[in-house]
Image (cartoon, rainbow, N blue to C red):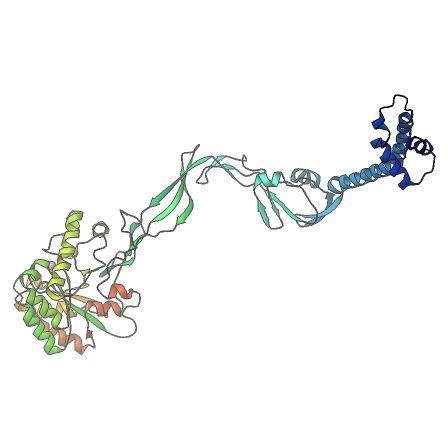
Length: 455
Ligand code: NI
């Protein structure tokens, strides 16, 4: 049955679907092959039919597909490699082939560029003209040289080709913690105070492998130097303010001074020695009870400028502690003995003190020149913001006790108001409020400097 059917099958012009169906049956040897008959002829005939149908398949289906693929492939090649596109090069619209490189563009358009230099980490020239040959910006994006040299024009972009950038030598990187330095802002003035606390900078330091030079790299944490401002107090506006100050007490004269001040209705500031406060805590307490200001004058009056760092710190801390113990007043303000205090002495304080108060008017009362001379010395050169130096302890003060009422009367008659040092500082808007308070401990997040710097 199947044999007969197969022999009829190879007629030309059979309809596709039937053809396909038969082709399928033969291929599987349906109903015939399993018999294993050696005389079976139809097999060869079946092969012939397959070839004929395969040829038609190739001609009618595959060839057109291949032609189409060739056309599409060629089109794709043209589109991606040969298509002309427009780009703006250094401000001028240009027609170029897609995929053009920057090097080709430079050569085709005759763009001249000067190369950068080969430089050290700190920017010194190691070899002139041995930097990058050109620089490229595409649509406002600054490309590095590797990116630029591999760039291919895609069409529609804006390209700027310019002079080459410098190329840096190879370097090693180390992340370092840089402590703050201590700087002085100004060098003449009655008041020294911490106007800026220090903070550590964390940054990369680059070391050039060729030059050996070092330069800053990435900054991870921007620190700042500690700054001591030196200036005279300048009360704002037209107010006439003056501060009377008494050193080296408390002493047996303290009570007399306080009585005069009370009688005249004025306040003053007492820079006391820690050892005198310890010996006479009631005298220290009386100063505070009278509404006057108490500050440190060191513990036992050494020249701090020539003292070692630990002594400076001990003198400040122990005197602040004595004052607090006797009066309950916390202060970080002091007057250095002899006014002797330098940038290096500040470094030794570890932030224990925040304002050093000197004077601009010296009565020279310690010379005991006579009460009239002390009055004259006190009043002659006074101006608003003046700090007048007198003494409480350290010797006979009879002349001061005699001079004080006259000083107060004279300056009052000139329109002056007597204020304490913290009030005087508060009258100058350039002095931070914390400093003017007279008690400004170092903030927990501040870092004390370890070395000096130049402002
Ligand atoms: Ni003194």
